[in-house]
Image (tube, rainbow, N blue to C red):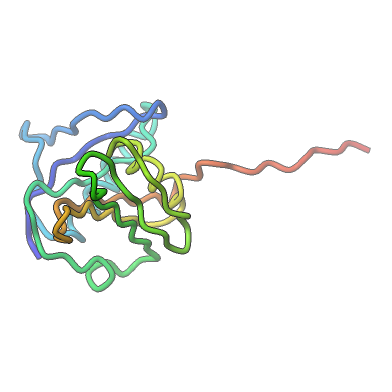
Length: 154
């Protein structure tokens, strides 16, 4: 499904900034697969500047089937509005234990942290259960917790 996507670069300190295209626009029109490919290329271009990922944020409500549309190893995180109307709930899945968040951004950041080394989608769901926003990121090249074994000299 075609839609309009805003591209955001995320730094190590988790601050986001808009990614501008060559023509000066900060929007990308295309399918989810095209937006994910473009964000992966942008991330590869910006990785030397302290950018850990480039996210593609949908700018309008859309029907979206991430599992059918994206073919790489993928994970979907669902964050929905709490019934109190202020907070957010992250649903449990195979990589996320679920959680209650006071703000949306930290919930999104934690979902992407849990989904490192994977192609991820975060579905932000409103109180009625409708997808409000979809956020995509290809994190296959980034490990948030690199493991380096001990070096032993004999």
